[in-house]
Length: 133
Image 1 (tube, rainbow, N blue to C red):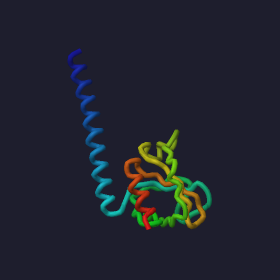
Image 2: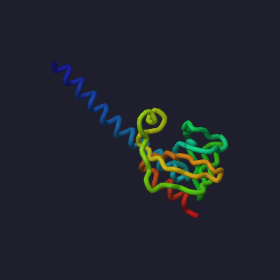
Image 3: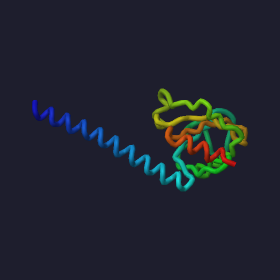
Image 4: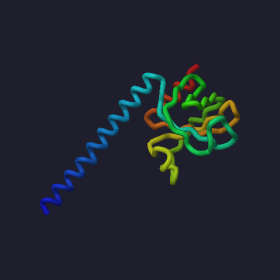
């Protein structure tokens, strides 16, 4: 019985410290990327078409600038950004998108309507980068 309690406490402490350390590592990486004008994110098409994007999520590190998201070879020129009511991933979507992201709609210059997923704590910074003129 004592062995079981010891193992349980050890497992519990491991979970707590792994979570705290993991969060710290994610924050540090996010800070480093932000200092370079970058953010980890995902993009997908809701309607229309856009070069190199589909209805499935594409993920990576994007370079942000006023009115533009560069995700690898994908360049999204933003015509309109609907960030008033970001949504959270739901249902099976969490298999493809981190549940800790906020998802906003973007109308691209290609005419496509896209979804852009960014970690909740990075979204205000990311929005400021693409909205600043």
